Length: 251
Image (tube, rainbow, N blue to C red):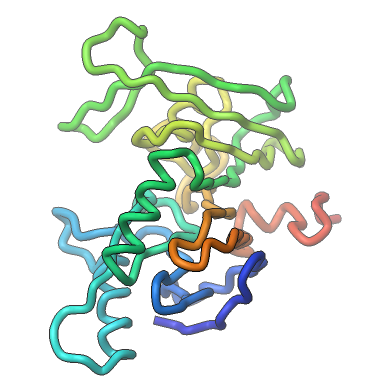
């Protein structure tokens, strides 16, 4: 694991640089560790048997501490395998409990960036749908609200920039449903670039899913400082069509 730097308390703005597809530590103290999750690795162990992020962080903590036995690392939130971006893990059980409480109380905030295929007519809006997951196919679909097992999904979106055939969108998930941003944007008619499962490969067959967890803000579980971490997406297609420093299209 690449130990890139320790961030300062309060706000940290980091530009990702993950050419080797390795997790990078951007903040760490005795209570929490904040990392950049690369795309296409699972957050925790799954049936694939592929090396997962949680196991890598436990190994990193153990080797750094030079202590026997398995290191504690609390998983308090997740990202899909195909999604990359900023995540926080707890280094103590107390920190894990307090971060989990923040999530339950709505004091833990994540924002995503997505590149969608097409140009939404409404430049910002709120999407409310009912989602149902097929556990056998791992596909989520929008269904009527009365459908047995359906869960309410809500997000806010804002179009930040538009370039040829694609748009850069900020997404604020107000609920945490499986594949939520992917399904709701596709249902709106603007699937996420590179999303083979939900129709986003019209322009992007073979490219990574253009969904990135770029902002994470929460209260430090011990010091009570307000922390914010911002991580720009990789400088690859289609992200490199946009300038994240100046917030306008590259010429």
